[in-house]
Image 1: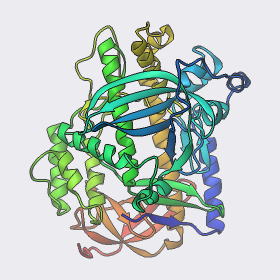
Image 2 (image 1 turned 135 degrees about the vertical axis):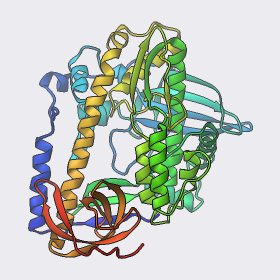
Image 3 (image 1 turned 180 degrees about the vertical axis):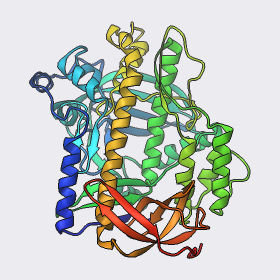
Amino acid sequence: MPQRRSHIAPSAVESELAAALTALREAVDAPTEFSPEAMAEAESATAPETDLDLRDVPFVTLDPLGAKDLDQAMHLARRGSGFEVRYAIADVPAFVAPGGAVDAAARERGQTLYAADGSIPLHPRALSEDRASLLPEQDRPALVWTFDLDDAGVVSEFRLERALIRSRAQLDYVSAQEALDRGEESPLSLLPVIGGLRQELEVQRGGASLNLPDSEVVQRDDGTYGIDRQHPLPLEDWNAQLSLMTGMAAASLMIDAKVGVLRTMPEPDERAFTAFRLQTEALGRPWKDGEYGAYLRSLDRDDPLTQPVLEAAASLFRGAGYVTFDGSVPADIEQAAIAAPYAHATAPLRRLVDRWALAICLAVSRGEVVPTWARESLDELPALMQESGQRASRLNADTVNRVEAALLTPLVGSVVEATIIEVREDRATIQIAEPAVAASAPLPTGAKPGDTVSLRLVRADIGKGEVEFAEADAAVAGR
């Protein structure tokens, strides 16, 4: 599906938005600066001793254009009738001293926060964008997962080792996808094959991927802001399968050792399924038979009603959290959307919990005792990650709301056409096509999900990120 962009032209509105976003960033309820001790510790960090030298392996990274905090690098190869996947993860556990200033700062933050005008990193940039980042043409320590896959993409064997690597290239999603589409030879030529096989295995497990369009606030070269909304590229989905495979392997190691931290999510209950079925029927895309994962995968991404269906499906993917254990494995350990036990273990530069998972997995792989620092602090992780997740969600929502208010400001007093995505009592979630904005509005008389309605924009408050609509015409404009 083509990318949709909403753009704010330079004006007094833009100046007001810039001030609102600056104020929002300053009001973030998390530390935005690092202590002198943490900065000094990060800047003096040195590469650890590694178990083996894999600098002859031509790893590459794949990230958004311009990224500097590079967590993963990959190398894909055929092995007989199957494949070998090497997935290298930044060796953050080796750089962060337990109980040190960087460790304390990371626990305060929980994860990297992404604001419209830049990021608030989990670690000092001397680590996250330099010494520990898997930058191209730099020798870097990494925790390397090596997977042997058969011709169906099933993992027959895997191992985890601490190694020295050297990435050959920093690839970005868009350029790499275009190269694959042109049929060019690429270090990622096997990614569609391996990723596709792993997607089939997900289907067989009963897993489901929403693949909702990304909503990203971006600052353009001319200093203006806008919102880009686009479905993930196929390359992103295939790459995600490698991360999922690694997270499942990490979970299996920790479960076997009876110590670790897993990412869990309960299966939706019947009430959620019933509500979702009703929404799909109201949208004219009824889910009748089969698993919900298969239904979601069957949707036509070029159908304008697919997005409202996927938005409705988000209600099925709630309740995700973390569970820790030491000595015995909890009964409920599955991540329902993946349909398997799973752990976050591939983004340690940007997410706190991954450092624990990786440290535990490395010890288990080596037959060593799990580090005391990791064991003793396991119980703290769920609360730390929940707090940071809520903080990130608030920042993202508040940022998008302010940009959307700015996008709509020129239309105050005008009548706009909108599609109803969801209905809750007397309120509706609406989607405006141009500018591409989702908002809450009064439910017009007789309207239902999937209907197109006419609404008058009464107010747009950029500073508060609020917009207000009123019913312009009680009649439904059409479906």
